[in-house]
Amino acid sequence: MLSDFYYRIIEYFTVYDWPRFLFWARTISALVSLGLIAAMVVIVRKISPYSKPRFAKTGDKAVAPNAMKEPWQQVLKKLGSENPADWNLAVIQADSIVDSILKEMGLVGETMGERMRTLDKGRLSSLDDLWEAHRVRNDIAHSPDRTVSKHRAAQAIGLFEKVLKEMGYLT
Image 1 (cartoon, one colour):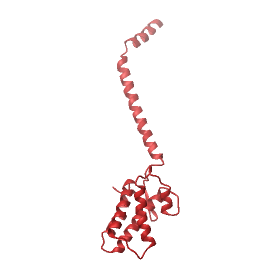
Image 2: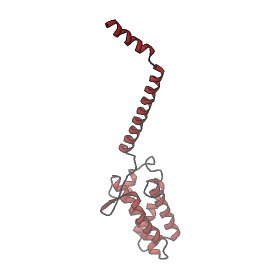
Image 3: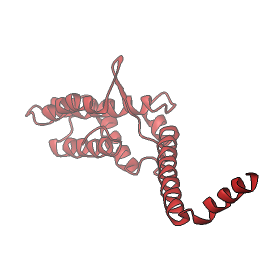
Image 4: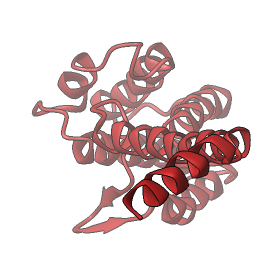
């Protein structure tokens, strides 16, 4: 009786369809491995210090990146005006939008210039463009009696737009 039991166990393992078993074992382990790799990628992207911010602050409330379209439309409307004072205001508002995003990213500094100094081109490849646009804003802010040309204002707004697109706030 006991020998019959051992005989059945040995027979089971010798006639078992091992290639089929190994196929399914490999398939299941590959699927589990792919799932774990995908989970690791998601976790690394979530905790990465270089990940793009999900929200920006305008005023006192946090807003989703898509909500930047409304303030940006106001900037573009002012730029399209025939009033030179509106062109200045458009540049100042665009600068303010980008500055609020830099603050939300947690960059330290009392001024936008100080916050931009903490960035590097690895984190924001259009950093030079941001500096150029910010210089136009500074020209306006430090010489309020002088207005910039519509062309120069449009260039600055274009640079701000490029930065906002890279940061994921405009599409």
